Each structure stands twice: as C-alpha cells, then as structure tokens.
Image 1 (tube, rainbow, N blue to C red):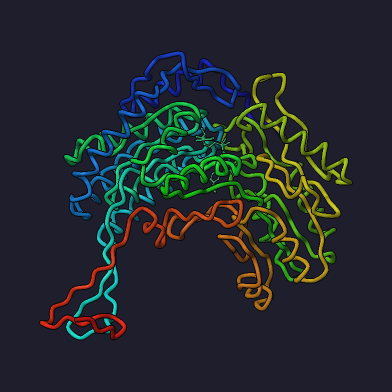
Image 2: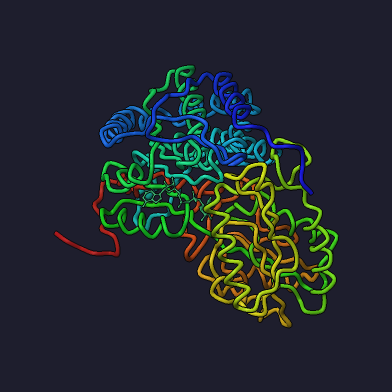
Length: 509
Ligand code: NAD
C-alpha cells in the first residue's frame, strides 16, 4: 500500500521554516552544510558549518561555564532542565515536524521522540535531588568513610541521524543536572532539529538565569566530532552511531585517558518459542522490524523461530508485510516512511543480493517504492528473508528494514544463534513458558544490554539504562544509574577521633 502523495520540497521547506520560526530560530544561511529531506531526497537550506576555530571557542567557553555550573547546587541545575522540558512540551508539534522532515519518521514516532525528550527532562529534574553517594562502614574507630559524586567537565555529545533529538536530550538533560556542560555535534543529516533544540535550551537558560554557555552546538561533519574526540578538555565523549565510528572514536579518547560512552550498532534478535502468543508476537515483530523503516539501533533484524511454528508465523508475517502502508510520513495512515538516503537503499540492496547468493529466500517485500514520484528519495518495502544459517551478511547490521528468519529446535540452540553476532544491544523472547523466559534473562541467556520478554526489541522507556555490549560499545545512558557516567566519584575518609589509626592494622611511628 502507498499512502497519499508526497509533499513537494517547496512545501517541506515552508513547513520547516514555519516550525523553526514558531520555535524562534532563524535559519543561519551558508553553503558549507546542506539541510535536506529524505521525503523527497532534496535540498532544503544551505547552512554555515563550524570551523576549527568555532570548535575551539565552543570547548573553551563551555569549559569556563563549567567552572560556574559545577558549584551551582544540583537542584538549581535541575531548574534549567525543568524549564527545557516545559519548552519542549510547548513546541512538541513543531519539533516533531522537524524530525519528520529531516529524519523521515512517521508522525506518531516523531511525536514519540519528542515525548521521550520530555520524559528524560522530568527524570533528570528528579535526579537533580538524588545524586546519592554512599556512606560506607569504616574499619577504624572514629572514622567516617563516604563517597561523593562531583561534576566531570565538558561532555562532547556526538549523535546519529535516526534519533536526532532524543539522544541529545538523554545526554544533555542528565549531564546538566550532574553539573557538566555540553558541546553537541549532531548528525550531518539533521541540522534543523539540532538548531531548534539548542535554541530552546538557550531560552531555558535565559529564563532561569543559567550561563548561556552550558551548551554549545556545532554543526558540521565528522571532522568537527574529531576535534571533540581529541581535545583533553572534553572529559567525556558520548558518541552514538555506527560501530565503525566507535572504532575510530574509542581508541582516540582512550589514548588521552578521556572517558567515552559509546552507543553503537545493534543486530537485534527475537526468539519465538512454541508456546508464544502469536496474536501478541506478530504486531510486536512487525513494529520492531519495519517501524522507523528499520532505522533504529534496536530494530529487530533476526527472528529465531521454533521449527514447529515457523510456517504459521511466517504466513502471518508475510500477510502483515504486504499490507504495510509506505510513503508520506506526514500521512497518519503511513507506517513506513523513507530511508535516510539512496546510499542506505543501495546498502540494503547489496545485503539482499549477498544473502540471496548465500541461499536466502525473499518471502515478502524488498521492492523500491515511489521512485518515479521522488527519484532522489529512498522508499522501500520492508523485507522478510528466510535463511538457513547465520551467514556473514546476517551477522552484520544493515541499517534498513531487513528481517532475517531462522529456525531452531532447542532453546540452547536458539540462544547460541542469538548470541553469535558481534553486536549486543537488544533482544527478546516470545514465550508463555516461564522457565524459558527466565533462562533467556539469566547469565546463560541473552548477552545483550536489553533483554525483553513478550515485547519487541525496540521502543525502550527512558527509566531504564540504555545501551549494549560487545560491538555496541558497552555504554549506558538515559535512566537508572547511567548518570554515574557523567560524574566522577571521590572516596572520603574523615577521622573525627583524636587517634591516628592506619588501615589494615599497619603500625608506623
Ligand atoms: P554514523 O556513525 O555515520 O554517524 C554518527 C555520528 O558520528 C555523526 O554525527 C557523524 O558525523 C559522527 N562521526 C562519524 N565518524 C566520526 C569520527 N571518526 N569521529 C567523530 N565523529 C564521527 O551513524 P549514523 O548513520 O548517523 O547512525 C546510524 C548508526 O547509529 C547505526 O549503526 C545505529 O545502530 C547507530 N545508533 C546506535 C544507537 C545506540 O544507542 N546504540 C542509537 C542510534 C543509532
């Protein structure tokens, strides 16, 4: 199914300009960077990009602001984030428009992305009164042993195109209440939503009297990110993107003994056991695999199905795949918008060619859509591919809506297949057998940072820590105690007795 006609590039340009104007942003004209839209694949605005000198200045000013911000009481820092959350609520519709125009998300997912930003602001405001350290039992009489959490410094946030605003907010809301300042280098694909977020934070800072330079935005390509990576004044580099990017960034930050928080690619799988409730599993699988046009880090890419239920499940999935409405993401009936670029579509086709050469069979989908209406855009049917084994192409992340279907006979075999990929982000099992569910969640089960039961791999809530193992980079951000990545701890021993007693019973003098 194809939804209503696509908007023209002129209409999208006007809509973006209106949203930006409602938020209060003047588009900074230039020719170094191109704002474009995947809805038509065409150019919207020419923008100025940050120079090396701009980056240097942003790091220096956020470092100076840090010296003030770190001693501002944490609940007062929370006021800034509270105000940001209010402004996000006011401008939710305009921000979601920009996410759709630049990242191609369907309307409900774009609104969901902004809701996630509001949620993390609420979370961070609460956190601003809960940056707890522990008091620890001392082995010495008249001594108090405690841990204190202190702000870390400037946080460099490098973000990907597919969550162009939410990932920034996960990092920034938490970093700000922790007393850090932030320099943000967003994806080259999403400068407009970045300008909007930066502007709202600047307004929030002005409203609550916080220093303007607690946050700076740098639009540009990976060279700008590279400058943040290599600068010793950037205490933490929080980088979200491909595993390729993480392999470049991680060692460079480590070489200067900086901290990095890496949120990289996933190759997420779900096991469907014989007892699974297929009425629940089918929509969960289709949302996880085809939602966001397969462009979430948590997108379901591998389905490991028990042999006894493979045929009925595949039949139902094939039926659902052939009915997916694809096209204009502003149309409320559309479920699958465009891929970010024709390069992403080429990568999808390349993976499909390879997997077919390795014996894979396409069960549904895979055709390009709207090529005549929008030749520079990349609309495609999500595709379901049956594979006999987990070949090299199945073990890679192709950032497109391809779902590989494998079969298994025993749970041990399913878990082994599940874990036999380099990435370790998100996972799930569909089962009504409690023993199977518990085994999947146990130390001998899924090796991922996220493991779910009877729900898909994508669509995490902000309350939990988010991140994955192995090639996904090992980072944790957002909820739970991920805030500890944005602070440094100090262990304090206070002797309030009149005796000097040494630890471990050592005597000296
Ligand atoms: P990408 O790696 O191409 O780019 C991500 C960001 O890194 C961009 O801002 C880019 O300019 C920057 N960058 C790239 N190379 C760099 C370098 N050498 N030094 C400094 N900065 C550099 O990723 P993308 O195509 O924008 O996003 C898709 C990828 O991101 C997928 O692999 C997806 O799984 C991953 N992702 C992961 C998470 C997560 O939380 N684990 C979330 C979203 C996206």
